[in-house]
Image (cartoon, rainbow, N blue to C red; front, side, top):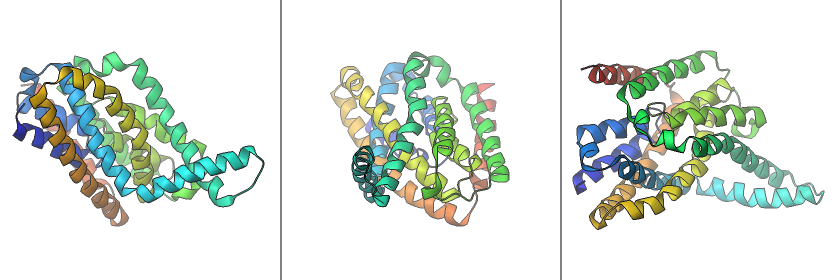
Length: 279
């Protein structure tokens, strides 16, 4: 892998991690177009992409730093106050959000560990799988727009909504589905409004992306050479900068628009991918 290829992967990761059009699908397509699947082993590519995701993790942490600090401090204070029998409305509210994020993360954590070999295998790099996932989740996202009541704000989210979004996130392990796409779809179907769906999706991404990246970091250090590590550093930095801009864009966009443009894009891209796979 050269520096230009690393830059391209970083830009794609930053653009597609938070916009519901599938980062894994785009990255796998880019890898095939640039011939990286002939230059690197599947294990090296998986490790590179997983660590590169730490850039988008940094982006979401920086963007939501105030929320994260509020939730973390409230979680610690609220949980201890609750255990001690003391009432503190603000802390309990933040503690509640902290627990909802933890609960929403459990499904992908459990399935991700159990299915690690499958996730890293050739099946998940199959263009038929990617194209089908792009189309299926485009249809589901469209249905969530049609069927979801979209009334719930962030402070109205409960255990039911967290579990629905958490289980929806599990499907992000299939390339072409999109982590943000599956979670936003699940959130809309659970009754959350578009902005709340996106915000909860982003907050829920922190433990998922962090765990994936950190678990693969040791593997990356072992598998990648000095030049590849420099490229990895560049790609991670670029993904952070582009990812931050993508978060700001999507939250602003969903304040005024539906997800229809992403549905159309996924359908078109899925059709192209399936066509390429069959030729």
